Structures are given as structure tokens and as C-alpha cells.
Length: 434
Image (spheres, rainbow, N blue to C red):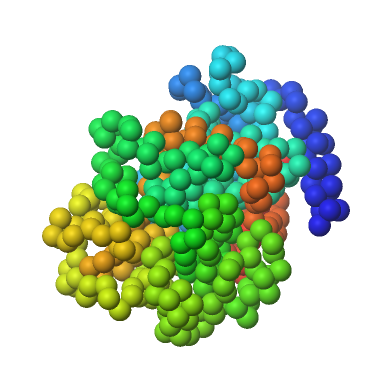
């Protein structure tokens, strides 16, 4: 372990030295998606994106983390706002153009992580040699962490922190001066919050329902990259963690990894038994759940969060109980109900990809991660980015494992094919650019 850390530190130091002075060309190479269900196409003569706002930076991309959404979006035609499209949700690299004011946290020459959650702005996409980032969405990378490792941390960190801080109400105030995200977002003028996540931010969880130290958090799909990050943050907040995973495939790795070792591993092979084990182990007291897999597993997790004395399920058409406006997201909004009394014993289930739409118990609230907060509300983006820097610097947050490397933008299609075939688990593939 020590040898690996020393190697990463040496590589990172050499990277910093090589990238101290970088000029800005007019043309760059990008990967373009020209049609749905088609491979990305390399275009070597694409214009370098230009800065449009004072708070923006230009980053020379060094490494790109490959996410499942990078192949699922074009294959299933979602999250593609325009064609041709430049994809890629997270990267690391060097800031080569920055605001002249010294008041900004990020400066020219910094090596940074950029979680590119603003997928509608193609200037910010990762599948290109130069990418634009907002200074409040940029995380300085400490020298002991390689750019490859940094490139796969950002989206998982943002998703985990928002799920815990907004949807479950965890306060990070006692952890390296972390933010109380729920209080922060509720101090913001409601009209500034995007309409499709406003109800989640303002009504998703009540003050007396907020997660407390000692509460159980059940993560279904506990081997994912997002689960890797969430477990670390949740443990810092004092939550007790139950991971539901394929124990034959991931149990030994999770048990031997001190940073992500849960309090209890439950085998997902028999979901019915997994539900029973969770309820028995917690004495039916678990009320916080995070699902990384999809609608079916989320439905099992929702059952695991129910105790026998909770109310029966809502009618099959539970959409009328939602307090949120309809959106174009693939999952339903959170479900606090005017027709139901809200109690401190209510369960809270956060779905990363999808959520059940029928047989929702009345004592439950369903949540989507309000990812837009990160890039549309500067106060939230800055609070999370600066806090992530402090956690990384102190070694309190470790990136997921890099389990494979592809060379350059031209290697990304082959890498995404490996994701399609489910050949990658326990970490992420990274595309390394020259």
C-alpha cells in the first residue's frame, strides 16, 4: 500500500512539472456522437471551447473517467440534448486559463478534478482535449493522488454528498468544516432553485427526519463507484452501513478494504432473504436507503426499510401524491404527500438510476439526487468542491480503484464496449490523454 502511495505521489509530481506552461491552440480533437446507437467518432479539427463567464476556467484534459451513462445514454437515447453531441461526465487536468482575480480558489496551473454534471453545455464535456469548467465546480487535486485516480472521483463524490446531505438531511458541519447542505439550500431564494428539483430541496425531508449518528444506511449495489464514495462520507458522519452486494464477487474485496468496509455485508443473490436479513439485523429500524442499480432492486430495498407497524402501501398510481412538478428525468420525484401525515419514522429511499412507481408504502419518501444543485447554484458547488479538497488533503476520502486504462480519445469506444459487456467491476476504466 505504501509503495503504491509513493508511486502515485511521484507520478503526480512529474505531471505537475510537465504541465506548468501550456499554450492554447485554436483546434482540438473531440469525440462526437452523430447519431443514436452509433459509436463516437473522432474529430481532430474541432474548435477549442471559449470562456463565456468570469468564473469559468479552461482545463487541458489529462484523464477521463468512463461512466456507464457514457454508453447507456446513446444506446437508450436519453440525456442527449443535441446531435452531434460531446459526452463525458468527469475528468482531471491542468487549468491553463483562469480568472485574473486572486479571490477565486482555482488558479492557472492548478491540477484539478472536474465533475462535469452540466451535460447540456458541450463546452464542459470530458471527451475532448480542452474543457471548460466553472471555478465553483472544480476541485484541486493534491499531489499524492494521480490524475488517473482523480478522474473517477468527482461525479461519485457529488452524487453521494447530495444524496446524503439533501435527500437524507445529513449535516457535514463537524467533518473538516463541511457544509450543512440542507440548511444552506433552504436559505436560498426558492426561485433560484431549478423547478424540477425545487420540491426535493425544500420539501423532500423534514427537520425531525434528518439522519443522525448511529442511523442505519442500507446501500443496495454496494460495490459501485458511487457506493465506494458514499460509504466513506457516511462513515465520517457516524452512520452504520449495510452493503447489499454479490458477496461471492465483491465480499472479500469489501471486507479487506478499510476505507469502504461496511458494518454488515448482505448477499444480493436472494433478494427476499436479503430483505429479511436487513430487517432482522437492524430490528426493523433501518429507514435510510440508497440504490445504485435500478427499479427492481430499489423495490426490494424499499421493503427492507419497512417495519411491520408502518402504514400499508399507497395505491398503484402514486404519482398524484407527489409534491414535485413532472420533469424529463427517468425517475419519479420525491413523494412527501399532502394527504399523509409526515412522521419522524418515515423511510427515505434515494435512487441513483430508477425508483419504483407502484406499491409505495405510505410511510416512505422517494428521492432523486438533485444533481443540478452542484452546477446551477454556485454556493452549493463551491461548498462541496472546497470540502472535497479538504477531505482529499487529509486522506479522509480515497478515490475508487482504477481497474484499467485506455489510450487517448480513440480508445474510449473500446472501453465503453467493455462496460457494455459488464467486464468492469470494483472500479473504473480511465482514458489517458497525451
